[in-house]
Length: 202
Image 1 (cartoon, rainbow, N blue to C red):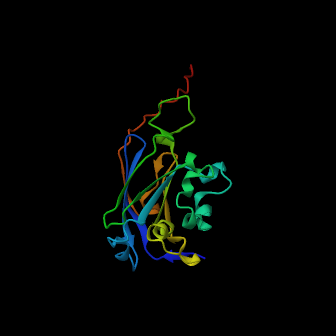
Image 2 (cartoon, helix red, strand yellow):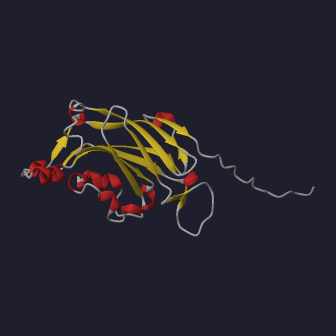
C-alpha cells in the first residue's frame, strides 16, 4: 500500500532552446502545497519533471511511460526512468517544490541538434516527439535511514498524482488549444528544400 500526496505540479510554460535543451516552469497546486515547502522536510521532498522523446505510435517499448506511472512504479522506484530501457527516451530533473520552480533539462545525449547528420541514431531536435510528466516525490526510505525510524508499509512510497502533456509532435509544437501551457520556441527554423517537379515542354 502507498500514500498518495495531494499536490499536483502543473506546467505553466516551456522554453525550447536552439540546442536540445528545455526549460520548464511549473506551479504547485493542492491543499498541502505549503507543507511541501517546509524547511525541515525539504531535503526529502522533490518536484520531479521528466521529459520524454518516446513516440507512443512507434511501438518501440512494450508500454508508454503513462502505463508505467499508472502502476505507481515511481512510488517505490524513485529513478525508474533510468531503468527498463527508458534511459534511451527519458531525462529528468528534481528540484525543491517552490512557488516558482524551474526545471532545466538537457536532452543533447539523446537528441541531436538541428538537422546535423551524425553516425548515431539520435532523433533530430526539429523532428522530435516531446512530452512531459511531473509529480511530487518524498524519499521516505532515506528519511527512515537518516532518523533511524521504521516506516509503515503505506508510507514507504509517497508520491503525488502525475500530470502529463504533449509539447511537440514530429518537432512541431502542438496547437495552443491543445495544451494548457505557453511555449516559447527558440529553435532555428529549418527551411525545406523545394521539390523540383521538373518541367514540361510544350
